[in-house]
Image 1 (cartoon, rainbow, N blue to C red):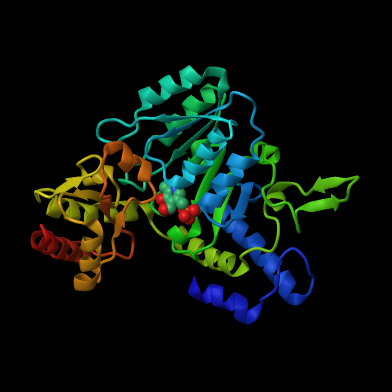
Image 2: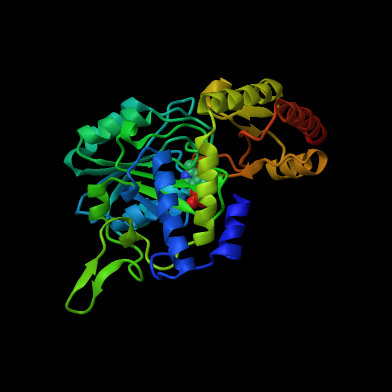
Length: 371
Ligand SMILES: Cc1ncc(COP(=O)(O)O)c(C=O)c1O
């Protein structure tokens, strides 16, 4: 990935979609090939794949691109990353949509019954369901296929925030049936500053562009403003070409990963961590107790200890980097009255069982020293 990013600057540092000279052509071709590779990765046609800055930009494009009607309802969950909450809150504050957040079950899993009831309550006004595939709060994966089906039965579109899912699960938009899917390449071994929005052709065609400008138009005059069809309309201006070159390498790498092995591997590591921490008096694991219900993730509330202190000790004593704090899900912590946030481990393909055991040792020692 790093070599691909570097080679953009050292070999073909041009802009795509503009010039026919050799650098320009090479970048135009690279963009088309990367679009195809990323689209293939989620089983989408390349015409339905838009490059964005990140997941946040992809979700904002949908939020601010849909032509909302008075009374439209958007449904999300009570565990949303701020990226899939703030845009809807903004729209609600502007009086554009009515936002409903479905509460989770006691163990933080998705409550399908409550969701269906919320859909029924919204009735004909239900316009969009925007739900995470996997929660970054606790690693719980939602029943997104069922959610999509129910939402469609109520005539609504579905946006799946797959930022936390796509690095770990094989995501196939045809099987999911969703209308939009957002993700970030930096979470899937790729460079920062590249994300993507999948949008079904008819949904994409109905979105207002958030980035009207260069490379988006057929004609731009007072008399005639005519946009190009497809992703180009939503990708105004020059792109993160180096990042997109790196995205291609990351996706090629992930295409050759056995996701069955990956899931088993992450759960195996998570099992070691779960078994190692679950009986510590200070620790409460968020979400379901079984590691296999949380993929590679263990998020913990730690009684009486500052999670940032713990994170610093883990780094300094064991070179172990974990996330501490509110994980951009501040509203969930506020609603539960948790003022200190949580500490979260997340395993991926580069981690080892030895590292998981090392985490347990250093963590246990740090908790006993600070507790
Ligand atoms: C579930 C979820 N959605 C959205 C995002 C936002 O991703 P980005 O910061 O790349 O826009 C994240 C990032 O952590 C996430 O975990």
